[in-house]
Image (cartoon, rainbow, N blue to C red):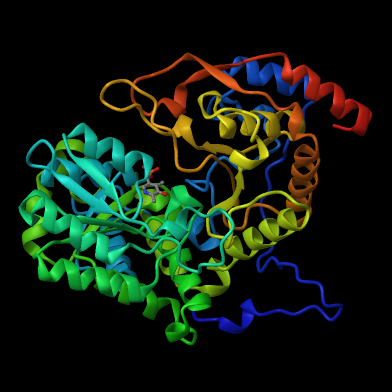
Length: 488
Ligand SMILES: *Cc1c(COP(=O)(O)O)cnc(C)c1O
């Protein structure tokens, strides 16, 4: 499985471009509709890229969730799935994969990552105000914790909030602050410490093994458990091999097993980790397994399917093994790195160093003229779709939730995330992204703000509806036509 050499490919002419290490065997045709149609689509979808219909989307860079390309091995595994309510062979193959790859014996299958968050929050948040320290929140993790009356505290280093940085591990937890928080709060009011691999919302930024060891030390000193959100574990492990000198010659398998070995509970969304559907919670501790066991049939389904189809379970098992293949896992980070570096060269403010999952544009700078209460990142996402047909995702204040008094809580960062799912896009498509984003950056003064016209109380970013605050979309279209003529 280990194929380190495949990752280092140099071009004789000195070009530094990522190379696809796979070939295309099944394709899906894309549509690039006119800019007028794209404006209609935005109007129909409340200027919220989540609400667009894919028939209007050219490159779908909304998310990597469930959109990574499947391998031929995964698709063929789906054909020999064992349909059974209980005791399915597919489940035991998945359990074996979890044991081999994540090195955890006990597996509780769930239908996706947030279902694991629901079960963990339900089981361990015992009283109102219980505190979960974490490196940084993920939207669904936060929503479930607060739903059960818990609170969170985020313990990144200040450097993590610097958009342009050369810090290799912006996802590291501040261990001194962690210890302070535990002493102030009392370990009895802390159900667990949550560590997220490749910290999603700050730009897909990894933590180091050194840092996780330090967090483990603190946890042990206070008798606390560590819960690892391993949804983006493969890429975090890949970046550890790239960036943490101690592990430069280590294999993916070694790095992954060290990380999961430092956690008491590992949960994941298989939509990211193994490019299928589903998710899981796993542990080597039978007590923990027993504490959670009853909740799977309650919320998900019987313990050998957890709300996932057996076909997806088979794909998940194969996908977990494929996560150990460095020549596969390098694909998304190397394309992201190319995208980030090219946009940076063109002056576009990007989150650096390049992380995983996608390229992150700093909307706070691009749309410096748009106040945070008019959602700079949401505005940039809408404007970018309008001029390119590329769908990104707002990761800024729209993705935040209001506080208990109903006030806005503005995000630390206003980002437009352009996801680069594994093995989905070609280099010329990435070049199109660079071209259109660079044009938009030059014309950024034409982008205007947004206001809510429909605001759901929970996870508002999914279904919320917004309107532009002025006729800025029409002005942007006029400039586009001036520069691109009749080009789509
Ligand atoms: C996507 C994601 C989740 C939630 O997983 P779903 O399968 O979408 O429910 C949780 N944590 C992280 C870090 C994620 O990226």
